[in-house]
Image (cartoon, rainbow, N blue to C red; front, top):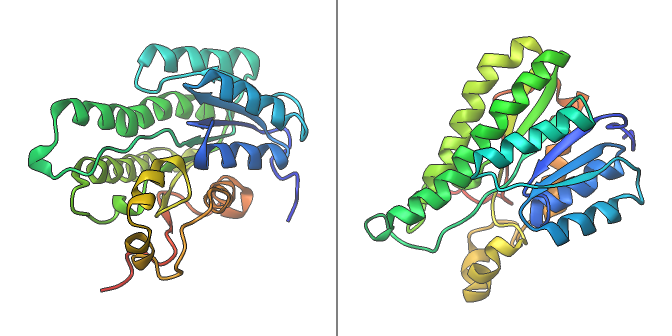
Length: 252
């Protein structure tokens, strides 16, 4: 493997200050990319940029709440002004909701999860695609979930949002792949991130019983799939999802 396969590439990672986003930002930097981290937590974002300088220079943190269109506008204005290109984007920012059945969920929870997990991805793609088309190509990876492919009791809003991400991914891929822009998705299962900490602590054995490999995933494992999908090695893959869930969901 070429350890610098993203040299001279500019990469955007949303939700890049923790979990899978953080691991992905670091992995891109390690392989030569200049990484823009877009997230809400400024202290963590600036600290991560400093950390990634051990690999190369040119990284940047832009405070961004993907629920806010004005933040997205500012983010892409900065990218155009500072870099003038965008080669890869990982639309990772997302939230979960408390376990609650459909009839018990609230309108506030609906807006919270849909504005982040769906509208946020759409707003980013809406800005990423024109840049990539203008420069003649690029690769976008969206973060869905194993629950973008199936359902689960008490997770209806999250399930709906992650199904929608796959719909956006497939439709956009059909629109732009003939012009050199590929759009794919990753579908993680249970991964060792802050988002699943509480759920895992409550009943670790139940979680592990759902995973044939008998462990949760590592953020770095999901990052490796994102980098693959953004690389030239995946040049014939578009409109598809890569499921990384340790076998979760394959039982009849």
